[in-house]
Length: 163
Image 1 (cartoon, helix red, strand yellow):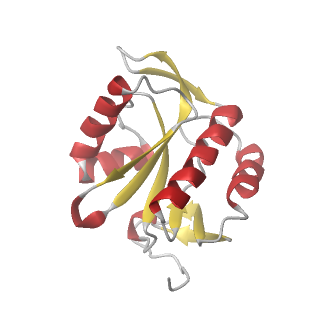
Image 2 (tube, helix red, strand yellow):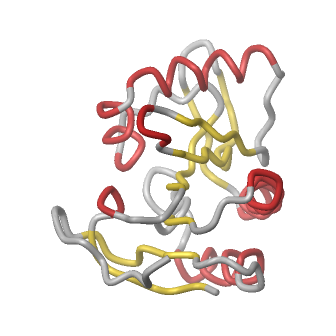
């Protein structure tokens, strides 16, 4: 079930945080930058994974870090030139496929709740009115709490259900 919340996603009590990225993303903007600064090894591991597995847009990758923090990276941006870190914009098709991959990770790893921002609407350049129904259709029927952060307030914990 999807719960729309407002606050700081980094204060979420969800068992995994979800973010949208590009292949070999430098993670230098928005939520990705904050997560990169907090967990610099995540970006190195992510880029290694991209190289080893010939990653394509529409895939998803789970990273587990210190204190069992889980971050799921959805590859939603098209790649223009991965050697120079130039990215295309996010696409609804990539988002849909990445959300399908996310559901598989949730089921396979038995993740009990997730928190995600308005995917693809920042540097991905997608319109929230187009993204929202894709998220709702893909995640609305999974049997875990999905905390969709619709507005960011730094340092403010959102009102999430007790899981």
